[in-house]
Image 1 (tube, rainbow, N blue to C red):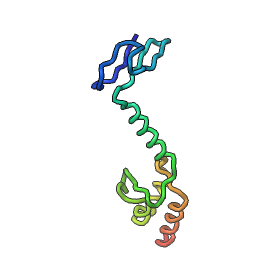
Image 2: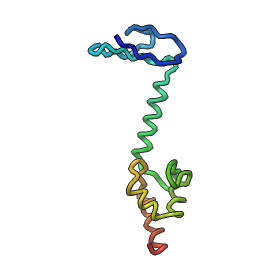
Image 3: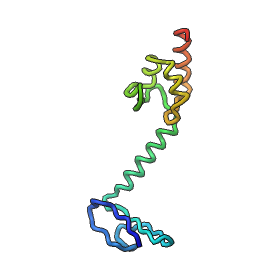
Image 4: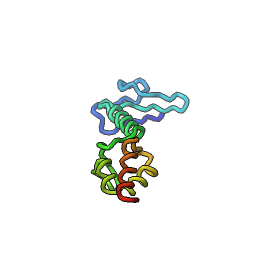
Length: 115
């Protein structure tokens, strides 16, 4: 059997499908995937869930943009600074969808500037 064991774990693992970490066993392919005693899998899973939640929900005016040209700006500040860029942003950045209030402010800023 092939054993996949976490490195630098807080306890030693038994190279056995019956290790105290309660590993997942793929009997068909003879693979034993051991769980870390320090529970790092739980932290990794939580990060994945949070990232999925952040990517799937629409963002509002007070949300902070954490990447790109407007990194560190709230959505409202970014719209006021460069509404044309935020039109592009809304159309192209699928991982950070803007809510209806943000889209209305973009339109308002564009109209106010005669764009």
